[in-house]
Image 1 (tube, rainbow, N blue to C red):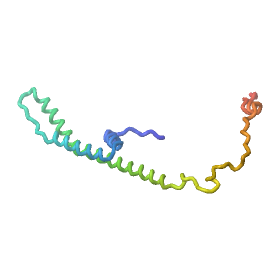
Image 2: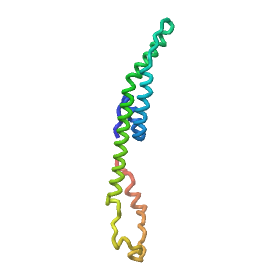
Image 3: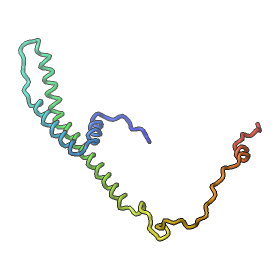
Image 4: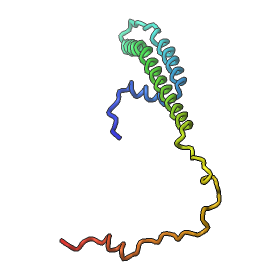
Length: 144
């Protein structure tokens, strides 16, 4: 099996959500939108003191990331939920196909259904190969 190359964080999130049931992915999409939207819609407090500039920059950075993430993260969660639903449907189809397959059901015939053996004579067990034959065939050649 070939190794899978490096993946982006977006692919990792989608794969992670795809491992969960599809409805969990939909709930995660809704929850991430609501949470990030509440952060993105907050007002940035402008400070007049020089010592508070770092806090304002940090708050602005989080607001910007939440503003972008409120759309990207739910899309990734919904894509993962779609992959999960697709895989679940494929597994269900596989189970249905195997259950309906005639290849796994043994053929019923009168000879197979009888429980009595056909002959009462016991067959001799196969004898193991003689040690002389075995050792000659596996012996390394002495030619150089």
